[in-house]
Length: 308
Ligand code: AMP
Ligand code: MN
Ligand code: MN
Ligand code: MN
Image 1: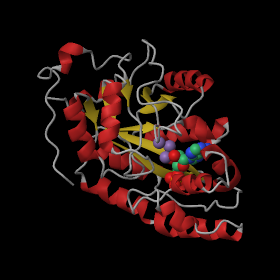
Image 2: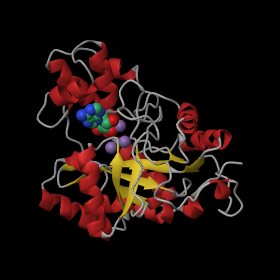
Image 3: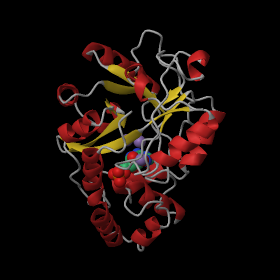
Image 4: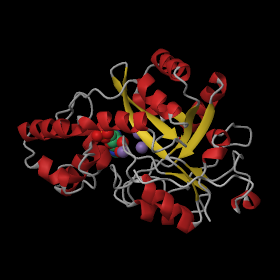
C-alpha cells in the first residue's frame, strides 16, 4: 500500500488553533463507505462532501478493505480536513454478523492487511451462492446485475445485490430488499463465517489503532448476549462504542450513550454514509456528542493526519 506521510504533531498543525480536537463537541464523522466497498461515491467525493458539511475530523471505513485510504488521505489534505485511517471489519459472533470499526491504525501493518484479505476472501463464492438462491426464487441475472454496481472486484456485498433488485423493480428501496430477500430466513440470505472478534480487534490494536463496536443496536441480540459481546469486545482490547450513528434511531443514541458510560467505554460518531439517495444522514449531519462524553478521538490525537 502507498506509504503514508507521518502526521504532524498536534501543536504544529494549523488545526490546533482552530479547534480542540479532543472535544466531544467536534464535528467528527468516523464511519462511511466509498467505491472501495459498498458506497457509491469515490474517496475524493467523500472528502469534498466532508468539507462542505463542516466535518472537522473524518475517517473512511470501508468494509474489510483499506485500499481507499491513500486516496482519501490525500483528498482530505487537499480539502483541509483532518483525517484518520479507518476500516469496518465483518465479524461472526454468537452466529450473528457484528461490525468492528478500526480507527487510527498504521495501514501498512502486515497482520492487519493479511487479516482483511482473508476476511474478504469468501465474498466471491458467497455472491455466486446469493445469485443462485435468488434465481431459484425467480430473480435471474443477479450476479451480473450486482457486478454493475461493484467498484472493487474483491468486495462484492449484499448492497450491490440490493441496488440491482431495486433497479429491476423487484423491491421499492434498499430496506425493502433486505427485509424480503437478504436477511436471515429470507430467500437470498447465505450464511457466512467472517473474522473472529478477538482477531479483528487484535489486528486494529496491534496496528496502533482503536477498535470501536459499530452500531450495536443493529445486531438483534438480546440484552444478555449484547452484554457478552461488549464484555468480550472490551477484554479483547476494544475501547469504544459507536453511539451517534446513522444506523441508530434517536432513542438508540440515548440508550447506547448510557451503555457506553456504564461499561467505561469511549463513544464514537459517524454517519455510516453509503450513497446520496440511500443514506439517511449526509457526512457530519448528525447530532454532536454531549459535552460530558468521552470521545474515541481523544485517544487518537497522535494518529491524526493534519491538512497542510
Ligand atoms: P455484506 O457485508 O455483504 O453482508 O453487506 C452488508 C451491508 O448491507 C451493510 O454494510 C449495509 O450497507 C447493507 N445493509 C444491511 N442491512 C441493510 C438494510 N436493512 N437496509 C439497507 N442496507 C442494509
Ligand atoms: Mn455497507
Ligand atoms: Mn455496519
Ligand atoms: Mn458501515
